[in-house]
Length: 174
Length: 282
Image (cartoon, rainbow over all chains, first blue to last red):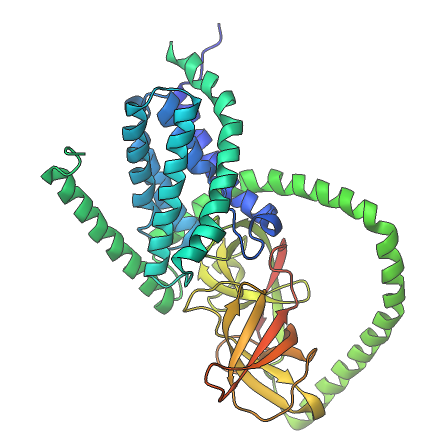
């Protein structure tokens, strides 16, 4: 029999691919995603992490550590502004983990937890950006033009990715 | 929830917050004052940039595929439109050549070396764009090694799209003019109005609702009209003179009614940038 690739390895590689896809999608579809005044920010990175929280063993995969690492790279490479996502990513992961444990493990609760995760992720990003004067949007503008569209696109991505990714982790659990 | 606020967790949260604010202030300060980011960050960015190319190249390939199909469907109409422009273009090109030669001769005669208009281009491809709704930023695949420096202007297609904000060895970040951050968008530009009177000014902000660049604090009495062309003025800093920015689309009074505010329609499409050139002043 062929030797199977360890799931931890797949998790990390998938994480980096998701990270780069975020930037590539933003670049290729920038006409659609960032058309004024709305902006739909894809966050496949966060999706991959949260799905790993749902299906995988977070102790074995070191999800919190990897979320901090990917957050640091996100700060360094994409925004050039250190100290923002390096804390937001682990916080969101911790929050999702805590809430998900209280709920029955099915698609609907996953959907709810993901909704919460994206909301916290985008809102904290907005707070950090307005703190340093990167944005001058008001809270109302932010909710209508950024939060709502971002939630919509990310929930669609999540609904599409949930069922293909579940068996990947399940097959490695035995 | 009781557990969350136990003192150990609280201490961790507070320490994280302090580190976060500290790092944020330090990186903003670096960005405003230094020409290159710290070496560690530069090194990291170079490595990540190489990794990104593995994903970005196939993705861009897919996009090119779609774009070429789209182009194929449009070819007939476009061809007709272009044909009508070709004759005009040849004429302008010849005139441009003659004028350039004349200009060179005159400069030699007057012993003027290089003026503000001369610049060379470094061509670069866009690797990726920041997935964030506030930072309008793209990463290009040329850096220090190719001669890119901070604050150099970046051109795509017909006109100016932004300036270089951060330079690493093999890639750099370009902040687009559509960025609404308080500390960006300070170009010196000029408008040539009626009777070739020149109005000098600075880009002060960007109106994201209508996709217009705003030039504020104009006290000149020169008459401007819709459709006047706007170029960089070459005053102050590393931006050469004569890079096309856009056309005047609206002229309004500012909030206090003392000065004028000009809304400029950018020439380049800021949401469709694949290849850019960095302008280096001679």
